[in-house]
Amino acid sequence: MKINQSLLRIVFASIGSALLLVILCYSLLAQSFYFWGLDNSLAVNSVHVSNLVDQQGIEVIENKIDVIDAEIFRGYDALPEDIKNKFTVDQLKMDEHYNFKVKDNWYDFPRVIYFIHPAQTQTGLTYYIVNTFDDTFLQPEVEKIEEGLPSITMVSGVIIILFIFVGLLLLRYIARPISKLHQWAQQLTLKTLADPVPAFGFRELDDLAEKIHTNLQNIEKTLSRESQFLQHASHELRTPIAVILSNASLMDHMWHDAPPACQKPLDRINRAGLTMSHLTETLLWLTRNKDYQPTIETFNVSQLTEELVEEHQYLLGGKDVTVELALSPVIQALPKVMIRIIIANLIRNAMQHTDSGHILIKLEQESLTIVNWGELLKGEKSDGFGLGIKLVKQICTNQGWHYQQDVVNDACTVNVLFNKVNQKI
Image 1 (tube, rainbow, N blue to C red):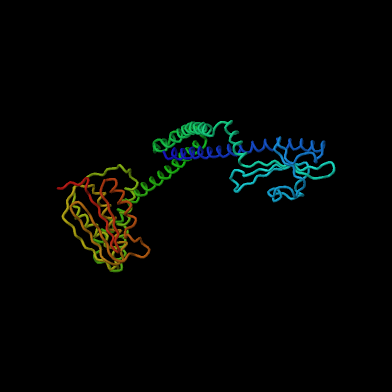
Image 2 (tube, one colour):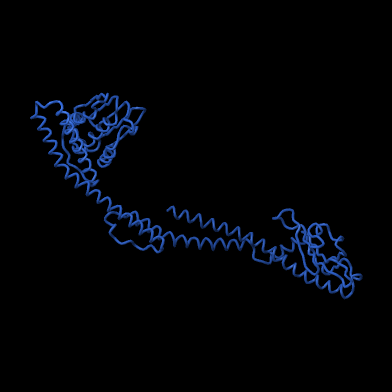
């Protein structure tokens, strides 16, 4: 699972970061504790030296006191240049203790450390007790301190093992309910939507599962209402449409002497009836179960194609469009309802979306090809085919037929290969 990979990366990145932080802190603390202890010790020694000066006088005290490795400087001007560059005479207060490190870079080990203790004799003479330690003394001392502590390698190894162990436990603890949620979401169907939502052990995962379940239920209810509405509306419309078409056809046969002004409205009624008939047939098929398998019939596919071209001729009224039929005699055992919907939708879309040009309708033993060249109607899609394509693709997917659409310049080509259920007669 992707979530496991992400958690692993986070855990091991945390381990690496923590390890680097521990090593850095360990090194810094080892130095800091050593310098802190040294500073306190020297501060106490400086107080003892100051008391000794008060008792015996500064004249009898040597400048270099080897016992505590300290030097006495009589006056500010006698101090080393490093100290005078760091502190002014006013900044060095009497009986206070100061220290500072001299480094080339902030991350380097100190080249030298100064510990300074300003004091005054009873006669008012200012002197300074200074301890100076360079890196030849400090570094070996710090290394001795570190040797007395647990080694960095051991501490790091223990931390790595601990983090890996905790990380694996955490991954196992988190990944199991997430995997359970993933499997539950994958198995959700319309039948299982009525089942209660299982518990996943985490409040966030339970809330997410509830939202998924509620949203899917709402979607299912919406789709069910729309499907029922389309089914009912389509069924209810079939009867009045059939009445309109039959009566329009009857009027066309009986009213031979109809004036031209009446013939045009009658033609429009016939065309509108055919359009509504195709639309209701399409809506009914869209609302059917995808596993629905219609009856296989043996029929003349080329004759059906000619009839559908004739039915849709009204779409070319007022357009400079020529239609070329290249229909081979084809008699196949196919689901006639589906074949009619496919051919009708492809022909209707090609004629509707072409303003001027040429349309080729080619039928062979196992395939139907429709190509339209020319200018498309303004505002239409450049592929030359519209709403019927969705239904055509759905039917081809249902039946396992091959569907292909190509667009090259102004030529739009659609090919349907009936290569699964057809049987040659």
